[in-house]
Structures are given as structure tokens and as C-alpha cells.
Amino acid sequence: MSRWENADVSSLDLPDLPEREEIFLGADAKSVVESKAFAKIVSTASKDTEEQRFYIRFGRGEILDAHRMDKRIDEKLYKFKKVSKATFDFYKKYLSSKNLLHFTHARRSLRGE
Image (cartoon, rainbow, N blue to C red; front, side):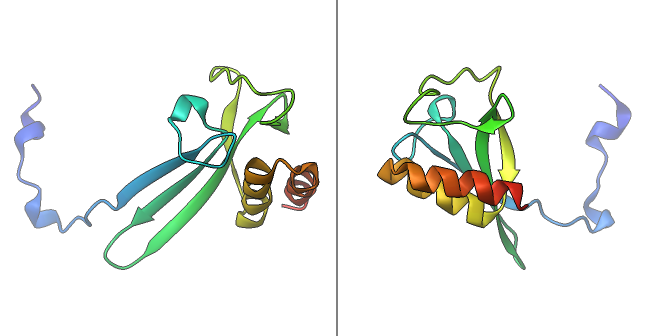
């Protein structure tokens, strides 16, 4: 054990860590476990601010198509990438409706980021 592990740091006036919540969305845009998720929302909240960040799972340089080719997720190959709220909203609409038009809008929105 290092001697600084038990040191009193209360006098340093460090800010409290923000609360963090992750919501994982599956192929039907409903909450699932991380291994089955195609998208996620990360919310952080402290006493002064609240923030949300949006992520979509990518593979081979593209957004995964949850209803066609990419139904199976291999976590080693496919990683979450941060996207804008607009791109995330289009992708979430695609997950819930299976309408390919929303998937196309999400891909196009991504190019504009």
C-alpha cells in the first residue's frame, strides 16, 4: 500500500464526481443490456449541470443496420462512436420503426457532422 492512499484530501476542495447513467437501446429502441445494444445515451448530472451524450455502434466504418445485415453484434469488432443528437434521433426512429428512410437520414446526418 502506498502512503498517499490514506491521505486526507478533504482540504483540497475537489468537486464531487457527477452522477452517470448509461441507457442501452436494442434493435427495437427499447432498453437492453450492453452486449445487445445498437445505441446508447450517457447522462451525467452534477449539482450545476446536466449533460447527455449520444452514441451509435459502428462496424466497418458504418453505422450498424440493426434490422438487416448486422443483427448479430460482436463487441470486439463493433464499437460505440459519439454522434450528434440529430443523427441519434434519426437512428432511434429507424430502430423503433424499421423504416429504412430514417437509417438513410442518420447516415447522411453523420456525414454533415
